[in-house]
Length: 589
Image (cartoon, rainbow, N blue to C red):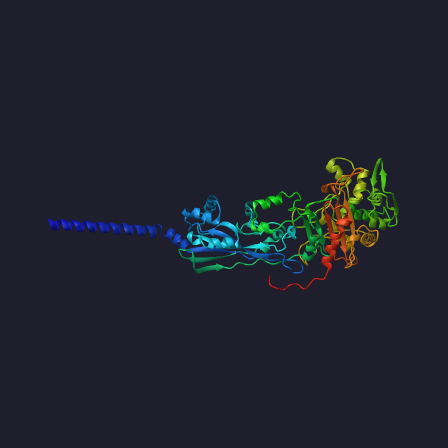
């Protein structure tokens, strides 16, 4: 009996052992056969980590090979979602000083790729990096990563021209040109950075590494090195840019300088400006509100996105129209007694006591309004509009930098189309001196002066040095008539009675034209005006007079008289460009 019981006990144990082995075999079959591929992938993912290697962005140099930007490291804290213990979320939130809800949202968005780092906090300082590194062993999957970002050593200088970098917006990521760009990669968002982004940005690399349970790298399995972006030499002269912006001080306005023989942009100023480093590093809400709430609109590129009455700088157009049509001769004289009557309305000259009897040369030099009223009356608005268009006014220059304003060159047909009203004779007198409906951008007036300087060719503005010049238009004019106007412009700066004497330089010969554009109509006895009602100050010029190398337009918003406010800035910019340069630094940037 006892032997029988022992035998049954042994049999039961044997059955149990067989059952256990059977279960183990079934489990092994399930794990290795049915789910083998799945767990193999998980196993591989657990020990492999994909790290993106950022590509250094190409450096932007000025025409003398001075670097205008530089690359810098941009650090951020990331977590491998597949390695992160969600029970550590409160600890992570305290460490990064971020709301736990925000961290959870970012981690949840990355669950589809559990072994690709999810960026949690960007733009870390060195102090923050040291603090996180000392504590990251408590949080599985936490790591510090680096991206190549942009630094603008000149700050606000040339910001509207250079632009800035930023992360692609959701709408940009839908565009074909952004198809292969990671959503967290810095790309050009404005200015030169945006215009040449495709060549500047380079191609990111990637490496696959094997890590242990603590996330430490064991070995490198695969690497694809990044490809640096192309360097770019642009036509800007940073000395001109710096000195011109310094000359503006706190005043709002714009300057555009062009090389008359090629159309290369030598300088482009828009004041007030902004610091592009704020956009690249990530600005606070308070910093953005301070920019957005600024009534002077620092984000507006006044050089091409604002248009103003050109004032007396437009007399160049009126004089050319008069000479070319034969309506006047260089010797035609007008008696300026401080104004003229047209019907029952008086049109005054800026010099209330009048200029006396004068011909074209002196009318240009002293900017006599009465003389040009008479020229406008003889020529007519439609002929004036014809020559304004030939000099590039009332049309976009084609610059590829942003939304460019077109300006306004009025005519009888234009007014009929826009308002349904006929053109009145008094409106011709206003247009002849650059007032009334006439409007232009600083870029257009700089292009106009470039054509006057080089004999009538208008080039499409370009930022590429030594590129093949693209002709945008050709002024068909008698060279003799152009020379008469150029001599008058020389007199504006270099004759004793000239309105632009403040631009006279001992370094070179400057020729130019002042302009004072009325903002509001003034009644008799008008006293001091608030700044926003004061006249705009213009000065357009080229130099040297004999063989022009630079043409420019300067506008000072509400600056008063062009000769006092704008001419000194033009002189500063011209001298900064023509002054001999030191040998370029050949160090590797």
